[in-house]
Length: 432
Ligand code: ARG
Image 1: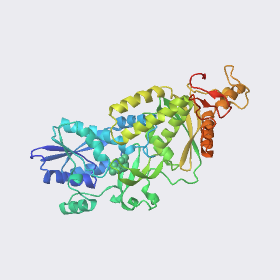
Image 2: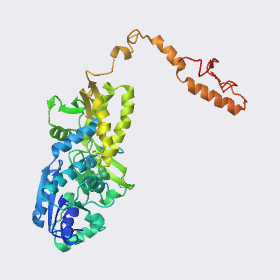
Image 3: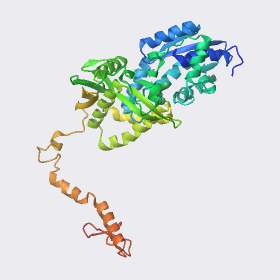
């Protein structure tokens, strides 16, 4: 705890948690001044209005930092990595390091000696914030966690102290919104068996009989740059797709999520643009990357996503993974048409100068493959295909029958006979 006389920067949203924190940072932690920092990662305007009003009512100096562009760039990086965590496109997770860095900069500029958040001790956000803040000399304070606060206690405390609390969406749910996703938690949704009311969704219409719509996304080096031929800045591009795809009810996730600490939680998310961009990007990778690149990239992407979920996008591992991601994505240039329909989107067309695709080679209508390769050349491949499995199964079969030296097993010279066609196969003499 501070010995007083200090200033603390608080991650400030104007919601219940952070409002209560303002008061506690003075009363319980002895800070003289609390400054509130609100970071714009694409929340709706009313959240800023609410934060501003609350800050004013609390007499807290509020700083608003616009980090939309930086956040949008990170979202596009996530698309390059086809990033998701257990099926959720990582909106909250991606935003936290951006928010944490922006708050730390303000805290440093303002000469703060403490930095605080209103996260509980149960969630992921505390870890994501502190991973960045603990690189500074500031006192890191987490009143909700340290004092073991519940929302009920916070509400009572706020009433007692006459603190201005209303909470978004009537305060019924805990909402976290940014450009990439909107999450809805709490209240009856905490029971995984409760079917959510439709009104928890604000970005997505109920998928109904709306006519299907085609949308064309253009990518350059794996990054979306235009929608339906119109070049857009990243923020606008994401905002536009959120509206366009949201109107078709695309991008709803209702899931059980395993948090970093091991707690399972029920989460509801909306993320129309993320769903469209991830779908389109993966479709283009499918056209331009080789089979083995695609297979290996799945592992790279999974590791990238895991670090992003942990809020550790600055980890050395991430930049190493990005070297592979960026290298492969230099060819992810072209366009994909996605069909938006009834809550789903799927790619229906893709084009690229880098397509690893020969129509004549794959076609049912052409006799030969390409470069002098004929269909008959596959006969040898077909003969070999599954050879080792046939051999192994034959050995097992014979062993079950109790044959002492099973056909195809090892003989005295350590050689295995080929169960499949009777030829001796020796490690020394066979040729590949
Ligand atoms: N479970 C989500 C995640 O860790 C966060 C959901 C948003 N809620 C929040 N209070 N930040 O990414």
